[in-house]
Length: 420
Ligand SMILES: [Zn+2]
Image 1: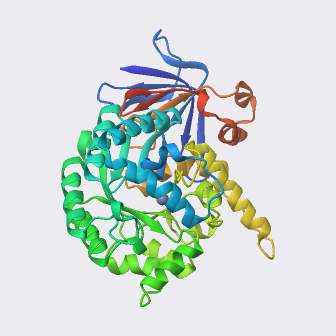
Image 2 (image 1 turned 30 degrees about the vertical axis):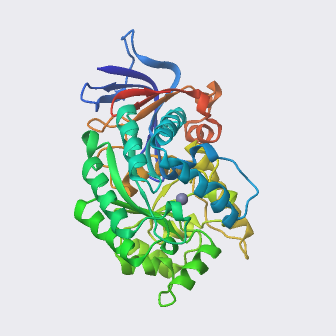
Image 3 (image 1 turned 45 degrees about the vertical axis):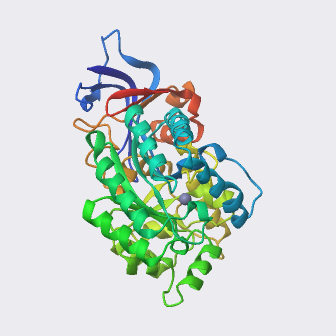
């Protein structure tokens, strides 16, 4: 049994972020929260104490692990970005020893930033994917992960025939989906419709359904990407239409970006239960555009947030959430006429970083909340002291905007202290 003590922040919904100023959180030996509530601790070995806060672990639902050490390379147009950064970063992963070492750095950095669950793309190499899963298993990170799938319009070294790609992906999924007591999941990961044959996309959809795995891909990322899809699939309306035809829109599908979605596409995404992963820092970094979070939410789209690494330069998810709020404000003030709606509030940011994201990943029965019986994914942080002196309704906002990674003192996943 481990005992944590501090101010407890519990996102209850998109509009309600509950604070308990002096709370005790006990984690049982089964890795679940055993007791949560107000109180003082007498235990001398309690973690936290005065000045500390206890938060649910943060969820990053879209990133590319091979690009971990390629963050912040600005000044490249999208095609140059792919040729000079994305493809070389993935090609290195042919060396499985290199992939394993990079995965170690990735896990260390991710945990140091307070992220306890990721949905991440790998490289198109089976052995590298296997070695990364071994690191994820050993180090304790919660992850949805998969071998990148593409068989065209990518450098030859990164392309593999659809049959072989699907065989390798199926073997990886059979071994790793649900492993480590459900902490690891497999995602069939077609890169984009432009980079995948129909055979590969239909095969990925069928295997994901058969094995009850996730699917992750990209949609509506930029105007250039949408016109490339249109050129390749002249009989389809757009990339969402292609995914629908291939069977890739499901309640276990995570689509990154969704910057350029119209109302019909929003409805199609909503009706299929597909999750859209908003990557506001990446959308700006690569000049893809400003995603209309408020319009997506109004249409009922399931959403989570993603760092989009390395399209997004920063793995710290509160920074990504702040950018989500700021992007919504920018769209509002630049609309003609100026918008009158309320942009999302900080309470909604905490929600979509934690329990809201867990819902979008179909994991909200297990993670995303500090409640008895939930798996103990949480952080103990020591933010600036003045935050606790503010009126309670201002505290979640001040914490969101001022928390920094060096203030994270303990990270727990499934009850195990994993860092920093
Ligand atoms: Zn991506």
